Amino acid sequence: MTQAPADKRAKPAHPPQTRFPVVDNTLQVGGEPVTALAERADGRAFYAYDGALMRERVAALRAVLPAGVELHYAMKANPMPAVVNHMASLTDGLDVASARELAIALASGTDPLDISFAGPGKSDEDLAAAVAAGVIIILESPTELERVAALAAHAAVDPRVAVRVNPDFELKASGMKMGGGPKPFGIDAEQVPDVLARIGDLPLEFRGLHIFSGSQNLRPEALVEAHDRTVELALRLAAAAPVPVRWVNIGGGLGVPYFPGEQPLDLGPVMANLARRVEELRAALPSAAIVMELGRYLVAEAGIYVARVTDRKVSRGQVFLVTNGGLHHHLALSGNFGQIIRKNYPVCIGNRVESGDRESVTIVGPLCTPMDLLAERMELPRADIGDLVVVFQSGAYGFSASPHGFLSHPEPLEFFLPG
Image 1 (cartoon, rainbow, N blue to C red):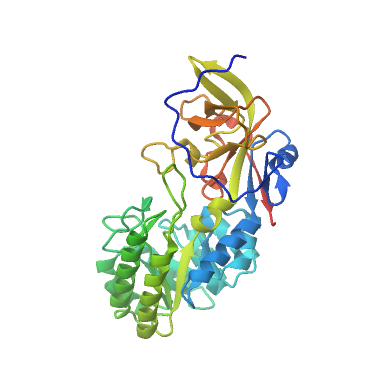
Image 2 (cartoon, helix red, strand yellow):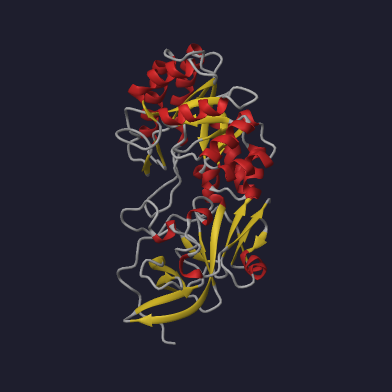
């Protein structure tokens, strides 16, 4: 087939992806070549998660995290049981958002008091499971408070609860704003004192506050401001608590770079400011555990998604690689999970990582929709049928955040490699 001319509209390049080594021109994950994993997948697309990279990320974060701040893993980022077990061994606790996630968390051996259960729409089954397990239930509304109180009558112990606060500020430049303004998450800050007073009248064990204003932020100055305002709000609300606050979850919000032009977050100014703020919290709330809850930041860069090229064609000068993967496996990759304007994730050809023979290609999946787009006009080594398309930054909000049933194609597999 005649090679198509280079597309002058090719998208800008990403910074080099250096977390995974390359041996004999083949990407390695957890000590294994991606080609060997593809053989194990037996023709199906798959995710692969490198446990060693997760350990490195946690160790690097702990090296700069203020002393005494607990690090919790938000399972919603990647609830694969093997990943959760691994992260439970590295962190101080887990956050869950469903009864199924709770079961996985408990199976990891994590102490129930180190598990928090958040989410704005907990079912009766969710709440009953949380009460029975003895985890910290993050109350998202006055109604949910009353529902937990009703369950307390049948519980052997008083249910442990904390209040999620919808703050009166937003985390600027966050990928997803979780607080500030009208939100389905948490209880508006101005309503919290009345809710705390009500908790004091009920058979509940009040633990503390959860304040999370936004996620996926790469601007240190925005995170510094968010931490300043989070601590100020926590101290103000603690004065209305029915008993001394014993738990303050300041959320996370630390971002990872996905798109061209983005660079890794500079943690220096963020952690220097947080250390000062933590001292203020300790002075005012000496019995409170201080928790930073992170998901994406801990696992996203440790995972890849791999699809095999099943066809190659040229349409009006543009090379298209058709693969056995797509938006049904990796919704965020297609731009349909939080992006306003779709941008390319970093991609390589896993069995031809370095090559002088390069071209502009658009990579698509097998679905009958133009949304099934893995990469648009990216400059990559020339690939053919059978080659492996690798998508980086895929360890979070990939497998479990995607519509596997769409058009009934095979689901992807998942491999965890402890490293």
